[in-house]
Structure formats: C-alpha cells, structure tokens
Image (tube, rainbow over the protein chains, first blue to last red):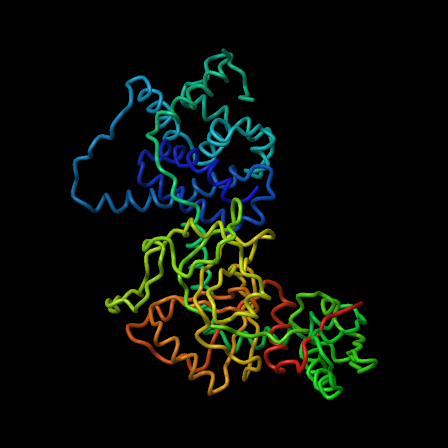
Length: 162
Length: 340
C-alpha cells in the first residue's frame, strides 16, 4: 500500500478520534496532520507493520498530549474567554459523544491508547499488545479497568472486551 | 447485543457525531517532507570537518570490504574508438576505483575494451555512475508535478503550468525582508502534468535546452517517483570535474549528501544563476534526476555568494561514493557500458 492510499483511508478516523479525545476540532486537525507527517517520514518501516494506523494513532495521542498540555498552560495565563459552542448535529449524538469524551478524559494515558486502538482502529487484543508493546493479559486488564472506571461495564459483563 | 457490542456501538456513534473535516491533500505532506529534508541537509553543512572524518572511516572500513569482481567495459559510442581514448578511460577508471576504496583493482585495455578485476560488483550495473560522466545541469523550476497517472498524453510537453496557481514565481519576490526566513506558499501539483510521461535520462542528455519533466530523487519509495518537477531549459551546465567532493550521511532522513566545491570559474557561473533566482526555486539535474530543488537562500535578505559550494544527494552509500569518484576524477573520454 502506498502512503497516499493509506492517508486517504485513515486520516478522517484519526482526526475524529483526536477530536473526541481532546474536544478541540482545530487541535485535532493539527495533531492528525503532525501524526501523518511523522508516518510519512517513517513510511518505509511503518508500511511494513500489520496495522500502520495503530502506529499513527499512538503518535497522534502522544503529540496531542503534548500540544494539549501546552495549550492548557497557555490558557491558564490568558484572561478567561467565552467559549463559543460548536454546532451539534443532534442531541442524541451529542450525548454519545459526551459519554465517550468523558470516558476518555477520565482514564489514564495507557487506557486511552487501548480504548482507541480497540474501538476505533478495531484492532484485536493480540494486535493491540503488539502495538503497545505489552502482554495480551495487560491489554485486557487495561481495557477492563478503563471501561469499569467509567461504569460502562455492568456487573457480569465480559472481561474482555474481545 | 452484548455489552462489548454496545460499547463498540457507542464509540461508532460518537465518532460519527464529530463534524466532518476536509483532509488536506497528501501532497502537502510530501512537500513538507521535502522542505524538511532540505533544512536537515543545510544544517549538516556546518559539520564539514566531521563529514570528512566520517567519509574517510566509511571508505576505509566499509567499501574496501566489498567482494572482488571482474567486469569488461565496452565503449558505449558509435564510430571508431581510438586507443588513446581507451587509455584515457583506463586512467580515469583506475582513479575512480581507487577513490571508492578498491586499491587492488586493476584496469587493462584489451581488444578494444577495458577489463577491470578486483573492482566493485556495482560496476556492472547499467546505472553505475562509475561508468558515466555525470553532468550537473541547473534548471529553473516551472511548476511542481505529482506522479504519472492515467493514460499518457501524446502531446508535446507543455512549457508552462496549466494555471497560475501552480506556477513557481517567475521573478524574485519584492518582499525579501522576512527576518525568520523567506518562505513561499506550498503549491499543489499541476494536475495537467500527471498525463505526461517523465523525461528519460537519455532525452534529458540529448536535449538539455528544452523543458523537461523530471523526477525528484526518491529517498524511500521503491516504486515510481511520487514527485516530479516541470523544469525550464538548462541555465548552466557544470563540468564533470569538480574541485572537491565529500560524502555526508544524512542520519535523520536517510540518503547521502555530497558536499561539492566547484572550480572557481564554475563557482562564478553558479553564483550568477543563483543571484538571478534569489528566493526562487532551482532544480539541480544530475543525469535526468533532480537531486536537489532548493529555494535559494531563504534565510538571507539579500544574495550572498555560495563560494563554489553545492549539495547533491544520493540514495545509497555506494552511489554517493561512486558519484564523488566520478565528479573528482573528471569525465571519461568515451562512455562505457559493462558486460560481465
């Protein structure tokens, strides 16, 4: 697969994931651009991976975390501005989005990575383990803890998530 | 629906609820990467002394360990070849082989050909720079083009872009006062050029005074060139023999940089063209491939002499050293082609 094809297929998904994670469409676009630029720089190696998008997603999360922290620090030094609400396409969808953004806000960085790789990039547990460089059991535990912390797993729900 | 499916469904709906965005063209990223590499190369210029040390170590430790090889080189020209031409080629070829670390290589003239023993294996490659006389052509960039796509046109190659939005500036911009470094806005590739075939090295060599559509040296793609430039007629041709050339490894981006110092008279020619194209883009055409397409002195507010310095690029280490050997040993009296 050449880079341009990969980019067309994955860009929007990564951008939207970052918009959900960081709640800022402009920041999400900047993060996605930077992540795909890094992907292009390393494309000879990244293209050989089973799931290049998992790699891009991790890069985007790391980049997003840095940019988000920087902006929060800058915002703390600025006078308070009134935030203009973004246009919402439907109340039910907004609720869905709020649930996910709240979930992503409330979990650790590793848990956030695992959630995005599992439910947005659609990787399996073994694939996530490869991308995150940990054991499959660790991935399962991480996902379970993330969902449990947000009360998305009811009592008796599967432990996996797979 | 299982709890896992419910969670998946929730993520799917949340993702779908994010307003649609427009993905910028991937060419923007390709351009950015190219500019990034240029900056990387420029920063390496300061490490000249280190580069020489690296070059010497690589030469001694790496190249000399290649396996020995024998190859016959025949004159690649029509008409009769005089023995004096072959003798001249023998001298140049010996110098080149010694320059790339094959100090035991022997070159003999026999039966109208050169027989090389204990030389490098890549000498047999038809694209080996050791058997060519590389010419450095400096051309003006007319517009940026992507890869070939769709059915190819049989019309003559256009000499201008299909629209002004694709065209590189034709005069030096008035505003040269940018303190942070002059930049030009990234232009999209001219879509009309995708239907035109890339100019071959043979066509480029045969018609240096015409417009050409040349590939940018690809550093990582194994396939066809992704980036091409429509370039104008050759502004200046630099000789095949330079004052000095050294290899620098571009450790960050891959590829190998060759720092070239031109002879004084050619240094003057290079400065004349570069001054005329200050804050505009020139293309360095080496054997039909653009090895650099620099924006001239973006960090300066007025032109300053390059003092005979120029940078070229090669994809592989052996290619870089072959090019250095070819540029410093002078042109072959008659071009050669290998037969094992």
